[in-house]
Length: 239
Figure 1 (cartoon, rainbow, N blue to C red):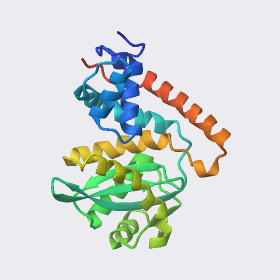
Figure 2: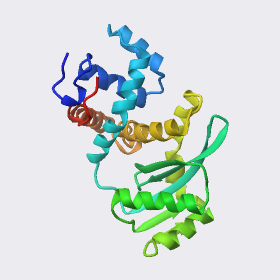
Figure 3: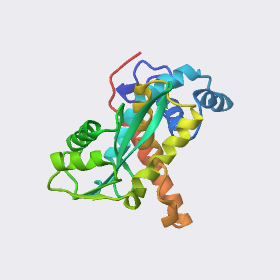
Figure 4: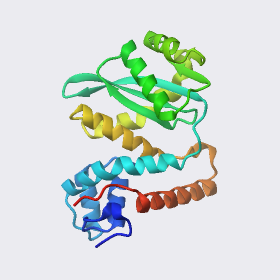
């Protein structure tokens, strides 16, 4: 079947099935084989390897499409880093979020030093095309050096207790990392959190601030946005 979007041309499955498989994998703590099983229960025969390829090809594009439809991020950025084990080697996942906890950027690096902090800040400024009003970090000294060299006009608040928003933003990725039994390569450690943070967070409104009726309305609205994104994603044609 051919879809209405040229992004899917060459795929024998319709857009709805491809998008639903990608959504299941990034939204719920499921393996590719578990997604395969769920689809089989719905009468759709698709292999876990095909689902894996779909997630690699479309996951980041879906996440980027959802991010473009979010309100402009705030002027306070929270930065934090955690270690991840990749084939027995320690790497560091650097993350920046706004005041709502929405991911601004994620970068996997081998170090946790000043050079790595400067690289992450420079990449973040280039990606956002601006600097924040306030930069919030923990007590890692590398942040202070990077701030003085790259963001001298920005207020820097360095305090462990002020950075809970960034630290808490690691938790969903940590849970998925455990379910996946770790990342197998630095590339996988970079790709998965980047797509995951865009797709999963889209379906996690701040439930504690919403009534049940408002939460249902918000979930329906976000599902509609997801459907629009998956129908219009502009990706290269591939068999």
